Length: 493
Ligand code: ATP
Ligand code: MG
Image (cartoon, rainbow, N blue to C red; front, side, top):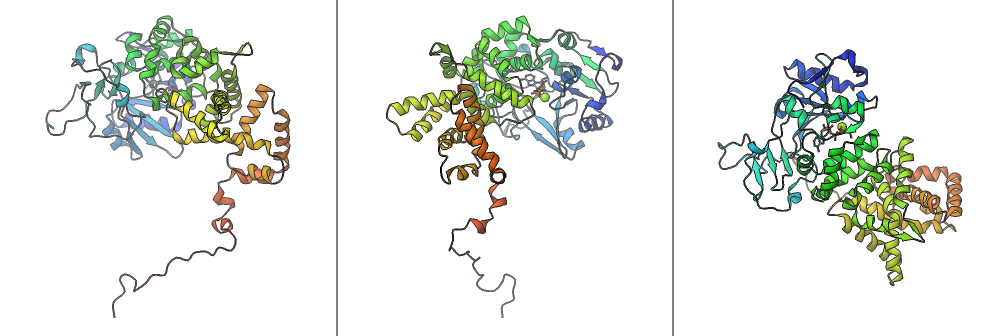
């Protein structure tokens, strides 16, 4: 790491403006015209340098959030842990962040704080609407470079807030471009691209690590993983998706400190889990997570179950499910989170349900209990939203319906909104286990023979079944009650 950055001129790197979103270019120019520094940063620059299509374009600037808001009418400020500006365009949101600085230990002058459940104090999502009245909770070290004493009766929230354990709870201390680069997670994620001269600016040796294919944390790995344990999960994701190695010291710290992942916000971890397994390299990601023991921290019960053997074979279900999901994603199909989780953990839940049934529980109750138990097992690590949990339960519930191939039942099932998800699960399970293959073939034929019905199932109910059509026969339409008395404003006679 050096004070003077390495500047890679346009002639020496492959980034062309053609590959950058027009909206991002517009934002960069507008900030520059308003007298500010502004760079394209993060994964966008990394991916462009690797010849990959970036997922999104992030911008960093010296303009403060309120200044950004004044420059762009289409701007919304979001986030508490990390305050950001979102510039809204017709089909895209460009994220603009003010350069940050991480406060050093000397500056922080951390008051000794009672240790507590830091996790409970993190916002459930990074991008929560700003709550300007929130202040640091008691028992935690509040570190603020700019905390105002003028507002004694209503103190401003601290810009930097760390738990007694060193975990970052809020992170809004503004800084220089260099400070901003070194507080990012990995060297390959800390490269800047500017429109003033189209050069790439490298403060942290990111270009060299890109060439070597290394995921290297910036700074002391133990400090950086303690500040934010989600960085460990991100390291694995980038290694798998980019096909990179995790650098030796980074890897060592990850092995030693993986248990801290359990301290991260479960809601944030749910978002990360989707990124881990839905980017087309889920199976590879899973192998690295298992190898490092991180899968066991995230999903301890499932991890233990994978290690048990059935008929002499360890459970291969989760890896096979992820291979299936990867094939879909690589073919350009979007896999919804409830399908992902159901495919990954379906067998684990079904085995639980089978045990409950053999203990005398009714089948649907057993399934409900099994799903609830599974969610309770993971909720302190990964918090699955209720809507997603219900969708998982519905897929498993619906599996029994495939057996009913007589009378009107198949047509009725086909028209239900949950049919497609349930059938996806049947396709996967029959392929993996070799069971129910005939049933799957029967349904495939049935679907082919009823294309219209399938179309109907795919549409929202109101489109093909207007309110009148759904009214039971013989029931009259209710009229709006007639207004009694004169209309408001009618002169009294
Ligand atoms: P992706 O391709 O998945 O979007 P990304 O690198 O752009 O990858 P983002 O989550 O979009 O990842 O974050 C943008 C940038 O913000 C990162 O490249 C990194 O520089 C920085 N960043 C994100 N999360 C962290 C973190 N937990 N700690 C430090 N820096 C982070
Ligand atoms: Mg990104």
